[in-house]
Length: 378
Image 1 (cartoon, rainbow, N blue to C red):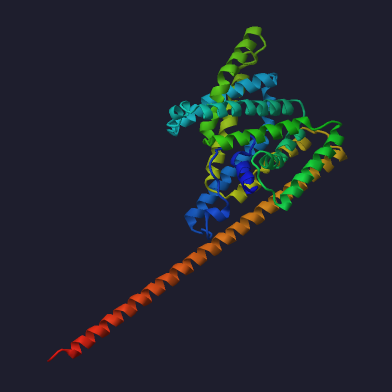
Image 2: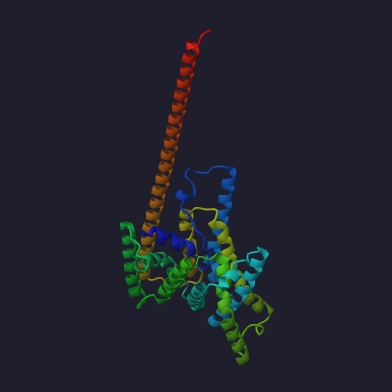
């Protein structure tokens, strides 16, 4: 298996939150030749708008979590689980997408994978919320910058995928970046590594699960629901819950965590079926870029020279990775186009030969008939 599979699996799930786990073809796989019809252009425009909306919301979400204070990260996380389930269930009912639920209950292996996915994404969500509300937005953004590199490393170690030379160079550069950032932070960037590895693991589980984004989110939050609700009840019994005690506005914001979680996923689902893989590969960097800029410009987090050097190495690795992916997609597209042209030529030649053979046969029959007619007595 080549690392193209790792790239696809990355783009099948790589975002700040869940996205629809549908097969996404490269541009070469979607179209042998460019589809320039007005309807196709309109669909691609809609897809791009939805893609920008999804990744834009994921990139700007650090602005939302501080509004939920004085709620702690644990309470915010629990509310996110509870309200996400409610919002997603409403969306599934509206879209009439519930036929998958009963068959899923009869598949123990998938139920086990959903439980693992729910556990891993709980870690990811919790660390991210804590990082943002504790003044580590830049380090959190780094986690999603290095996530593609971690995903490729997992593809090599667990899926036995083979890397191309440019991908080896990108992974090596990323490893060097982590070493530089370890010096810059005075310790390994644990927040970044935890976010990157938890989401890469989540992606691996989702690859094996093969369930739609909304459906998967509904199943995962269903697993999370009872523990989260129990935690909220426990907080309330201790008098430490902020829901209902900080005013109606605060309660509404906590409930809005469900919308914040699911709405970008809906937008991404609309984008994934309309734009090619190469475009999604570029759009995915919008979220960590926005998070990084917010950390620097809005939250005014410190960036000493060592951290700039580490981030520069990460960006160099991602640039190399993106260039390699685009080049591979272009070659694949060219190969598919040439194969289609060759197949069309072979079909045309076969048709021409068949037509010539038929004409020759018809001419032979005509000639024989003429000879027979000439040989008959008048």
